[in-house]
Amino acid sequence: PMPYQEDREALYREVAGSSVALMLSWHEGFGLTGWEAIAAEVPLIVSEQSGLHTLLYDEGIDSFAYGLTVDGSYDKDEHPNFSDSDRTKVANLILQIARAPDAARKRATHLKTHLVGRGFTWAKAARDFLTALGLPPPPTDRRNLVSTDNNTSIGDAVGAARVIDYEHYLR
Image (cartoon, rainbow, N blue to C red):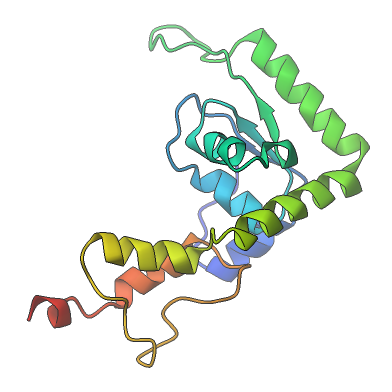
């Protein structure tokens, strides 16, 4: 695991320098870890039970990630919460990526390119969030609220939410 990092650019560089990212949750509706890996074009091993994998599957681009079914255990009293089969599947996928790192990076790049091409960007997520709340998009001339650079992370959407003048919307 990486230490906590407040500097978004430093975090992005750290993620982008990784050889592989793991998102092995049994249930993960959003999957920020996976999205950050995708933004940084890092090969992603992702649980097929996650919402992110479901989206990739629905979009027909799940083959650009390394999906696996995580067996594990849902019993809080049972430890460890992963199975020997899980360990073997993850190890095999890591070895597959390690044996062909250039091909794995190419898959990761294709994954990001396809998602961005289909409109999955943080800027759009921030706009859609505000729209869902019934709020107009923030005024773009006040600050550079949402970057149009597709190499950015969720921090941009969060940053946009932080700088919104909520009093303006309450008037």
